[in-house]
Length: 112
Length: 114
Image (cartoon, rainbow over all chains, first blue to last red; front, side):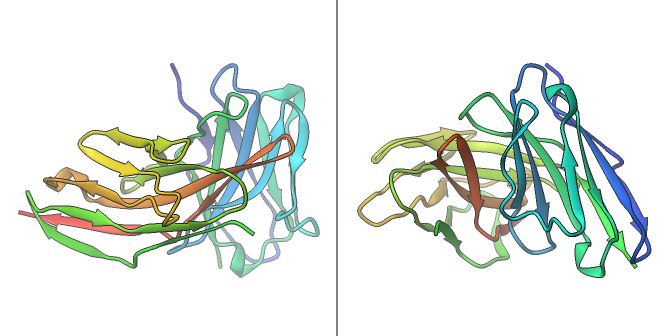
């Protein structure tokens, strides 16, 4: 069974630029999560989708972050414009409803 | 709100030493508890879990017991190997409506030497 796929693995951008990350969850997993992991900290949930609907986006900085999950499968997370403090690893995870989450390898973003 | 506190790292041990990484939590209701491991350059992998009080999760020689009375879920292994070097995250999952959100601790880096 293929795991959660993410791309790109690494991205370096300048502040005020925009960036997008892509995630393909495990086939059949209805729930998809995006986490932000700042160096030295645990992952923090940004947004949770159930199929293509948003379940929880309470910690998503909506002035600059957006996410969508078209057709209930792949998802993209966008940052526009980026700030220095957005430098982090962005993790995507998926799960069957209310079961353990499986994580992708993450995208390491550096904002200079 | 929900929170997880785990012991500061890094933890440095010699191979075959006994490992304990402490984890305590604060949560309303009855959360599920997890330990995730993150090897260098990789994503998080579920190591073990426990879904109710007194449950013991175990995997690859690691164990943790869900202690409701002390709100703890300490990770233990009797004999660590160099290949266990990684960052270990304690987490809890609490349901809010249809959402099932993981709250993580800050992670504990384990370094095992020969």
